[in-house]
Length: 286
Ligand SMILES: Cc1cc2nc3c(=O)[nH]c(=O)nc-3n(C[C@H](O)[C@H](O)[C@H](O)COP(=O)(O)OP(=O)(O)OC[C@H]3O[C@@H](n4cnc5c(N)ncnc54)[C@H](O)[C@@H]3O)c2cc1C
Image 1: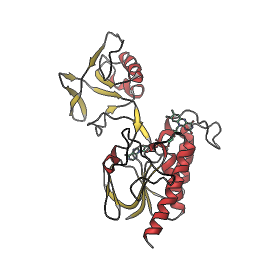
Image 2: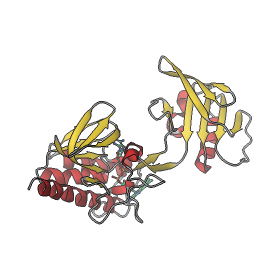
Image 3: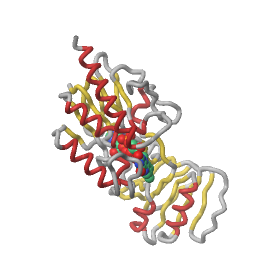
C-alpha cells in the first residue's frame, strides 16, 4: 500500500513528487510517455522564474534530474482507471493494479484520442511527425478543426490518396488526391500483424495503410470519468487545497478547471496537493 500515487509527470506531478519524497511519504510516480509532460514540446520557455533562454526539453530534464535525485519509485505505465475502495484507492494501469491511501491526478492535457480506439498504438496524432512513413500509400485522416485542414494539405503532398473524414460543416478544400467524407463514423479498424489494413465506416470501408487523427486537445482525464469528478469537458474542479470532492484524491496542473494554465501554477499546485495528501494521511492515522 502506497501513501500517495501521482499520475502524470509534468511540472505539477514532478513538483508533487519532490514535496512527497522530501516529507518521507511512500510514493509511486506513474508516467505514460515522457517525464516533463508538455515541456518536451515547447521550443522556448517564457514566464517561468529562473528559466532564461531555456528550451522546454532542457527545463524538463532539469525537473526530472531534481526528482530522480530523491530516488522515487517510477513506473512508465498508462493509468486507465481509478477505483474508490473503503479506505484506499486502486490505481489501474495497462500493466498492473496499485493500492494507495491518496492519489494526485496531474495528467495535464493532450491530443484527443479517437474514441473507442484509444489503445491502438499505430494511430498517428501528428501528421508532421509521421507522414513520411506513409509515402505513396493510402491513408485516412479524421479531423474536426482548422489544424486538421492544415494536416490534410500537408499529408496530400506525401501520401498517394487521402480520405479526409471531416466532423463538421462543409469545408472549401480541393486537392486532386483528397476525398473529403462528411457525416461518417469509424465503426471498426482491421489490423493484421500490427499493421492497419482497413477502416470500417457506417456506410463504406476504406482500404488504408495508416490512420491520422486531429480532433483538437483537451484534458487527459478519461481514466477518472467513473469517479464523477470531471466536468463535461473533462476538467476537474478542486478547492484551494487541490482537493476534489473525493477525500484523498487531489488534482493539480492543467487537468484542473481554472483561469491560468502555466508551468508556475502547475508546479505550485503540485506542492499544495502533496502537502495536503500528507496531512490527510496523518489525520487518518490518528
Ligand atoms: C505550445 C505550448 C507552449 C507553452 N509555453 C509555456 C511557457 O512558455 N510558459 C509556461 O509557463 N507555460 C507554457 N505552456 C503551458 C505549460 O506547458 C503547462 O501549463 C504545463 O506543462 C502543465 O503542466 P502539467 O504537469 O499540469 O501537465 P502536462 O505538462 O500536460 O503533463 C502531464 C503528464 O501526464 C502524463 N499523463 C497523461 N495521462 C496519463 C495517464 N493516463 N497515465 C500516466 N501518465 C499520464 C502525460 O504524458 C504528461 O507527461 C505552454 C503550453 C504549450 C502547449
